[in-house]
Length: 566
Image 1 (cartoon, rainbow, N blue to C red):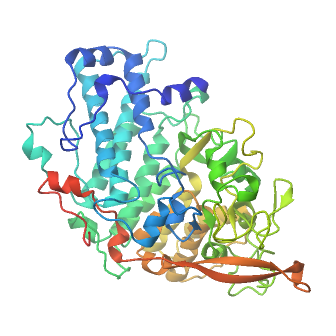
Image 2 (image 1 turned 45 degrees about the vertical axis):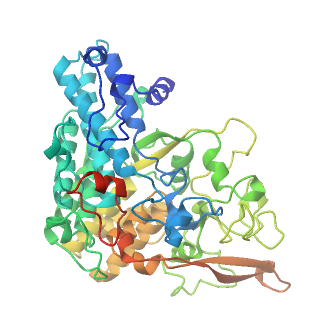
């Protein structure tokens, strides 16, 4: 394991460092023939540059300039004004400068590197690993997948992109100035690359190869991207355009696309290893689910693929921990999210007789207690104190929670900030619970009432200790229950930002953020009075359904159309 982690962090050999600040993103940086010979006539050297390509994948839990993307949604609120989420929320971003950065260029640099590797292996007939025959074919599959992964990143940020499957020379003017392909054409290219990858990859690697792409990884990316393509933002617009329909109409649908998305998800669910056993399975208990994010990520059968060393040391825990525990109170959950955790009778706080606003934290969905820290919750041997003057008080002071909550899900309670070495956090890119929810969502859209919808949603709920969904729900009722299940089960895993956009509901979810104040009061239940308050108003306009392409890229290519409204 240590060897693989070290290899994944190695710097790229000089012959494949693809950077060119003055030329367009498709230009190939100059390399010498001897450099290519040195790399591609050696399996070990080729392996190193492929390992480096993995490191170009974006962080999972630190996707937004090193911090959690949830704070650019109604999931959470960062405490520091300098964090990039603030700019998403106050609207201070544009085609000249967006909070994620020039990822249009970054992803094309990675795609260019992938193409160079594939071409170099073919040109120089790279030898196989003499100690592990077949590893070269595996590595080729990994590169095909990674090329698809970077194109998928472009799609979910910008919409349709330029499909590039070979390296370019500065003289390839027509190729360098291509227009964007439609969204669906890009999804087809991603699927094609995933298929090319999957036929070269095993279902499972030995522990010494942890973090490498497998056949299941390829199928999972197809599941996600076909689901996105079928969703209202792209269902119709994606067939003919690189740009989405950013109107307020969120009913666009295509049964054929939903059926394809359901089939892609089911392929992951049904995947079996060489012994005929299912490759993936949910962690059976909520405690084991929680361990999956902390200590058993690489061993979990629920995990399909991870980004190795998404965070190292104490960086993630310091970002999330309360000020009273030495942290920055980042990604503080919102009351918006807290309100969407059901009661343990399976009903919402709006309909359950169990909900008591004077005691808002009792009888909740058990995931609430594994995901969220609230006033008087036990953490690191003491009760959380969000009241005025408390060690973890809610306020607008530096590194204090703005909402009255803290994130528990991704933390490790054993960490003490400033003591010890910390930990390696492996970001979960795909896990089986997402695929179950992908499958249920797609089935409900083209085959409402299919009994497998309940089967797969209820498996996730049963693991959490929640009652099964009721039978007889209408298609719209089931849609809302699936969306809420996804909101809860996948919270803080870099899904919400994209989900509210593909569903076209962001114009209602992203405008007002709420928190909870706790104040000691004699005679109040448990000694505290709880008051919901507005944390902030956020700016929204429908152009924000996609990210603008950085303006200097549109200036280089006269055929590169900017997204609408930017």
